[in-house]
Length: 75
Image (cartoon, rainbow, N blue to C red):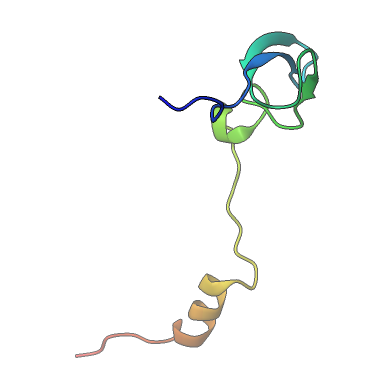
């Protein structure tokens, strides 16, 4: 294995959005730094299963429906 090509791992503190903190090893920052998260798994709907809705106002789906919404198949 080559020497001096691997990142330096050190201990940092991660502060969650609810104020809780934990220590982990990381290559981010330097020894003893604190990483403050703006979004974390305890608060974000992607991880908590929140009731987020996808709205397409004026997007591709709306353009398609406006252009082709009146088409029907008649036999």
